[in-house]
Length: 442
Image (cartoon, rainbow, N blue to C red; front, side):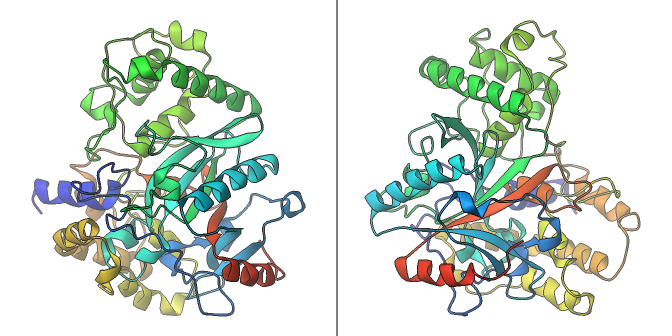
């Protein structure tokens, strides 16, 4: 296939998300039409009707939650295909309207931080379950469209996301999260994931970095515009700047400290979060004194990922549904591959998402063939030549979905832990959640 074709596949399938202008960006995150319903289930055994490709294998959940420390019901929500794949949901009751949504999110952020469910350095991934059964494009992304970074202040949790503006940064109560009462209905489902190596020392340093960034942000992103939003998801900053990732993390640190007041380092949402996690292992002095090749303290949560794996030590950013698929019964996997790639109810897609999904639909064919080969028992080594072709013109990257993918690799190898999925629900659904919470929860 031509180089441009594969680049288009990578750009749209692998990295769409974090968009700031629903009216003009075909990869809009908000849904454009304000579609952010909770996709509640009529099934008595589920809160949400989530297919396996929007779920995680139960076997990969290793983080314990102390349910005695918060009042919200916690439940295991099995996927529509199997109980072994699903979501660990914490249900939050919310009222109608923007003000009620904001209050529910602020209370959640305070309560779950106090309970240790939200910690400094956690990632909160915008999850849109209503995109299930639409088209391959959002299915491959596992319904994830944005990544936000958690920090705490005064014992409560807050978020700081790229774009670093009032539509995103707050206590999960800004328009991206709670809606604006108009064209953006916000989001009702959030995955919480946690990088393995976030020690207490790193969490303290992360809070320091966030505090310094917020203090200096008016100058950094004012006239200087140094860390503005990056809409070209195809080109991560280390590629566009011709640097190593150690150098870009170090540069971000120097920009935050205002040691560097000239370099432009635009970032999309997951890129910013990924860099801040890597920076959290460094003190301000280590960054100030760093050599030209970057500070040795920089510690990536995981290496930027290829589109698909070329060997057993890799996982691809388009392989999230494949990981969950492999946790379903072997006899039905081949048929389930079709569920990922078939077109369903496209009316649930915003106009922007639908346009992109239709544009890349022909490019899903080779990816579907790759899935079918792996499901049939073909090893990653045997598919390596195909993977090399798919990956050859695509720089490794860190899309919002990669954080969840890293959490559902085999427990012995994953770099990120899945904590829970926070779901904001109506009063009636909340009562259902309390009943479901009486059942076993991983």
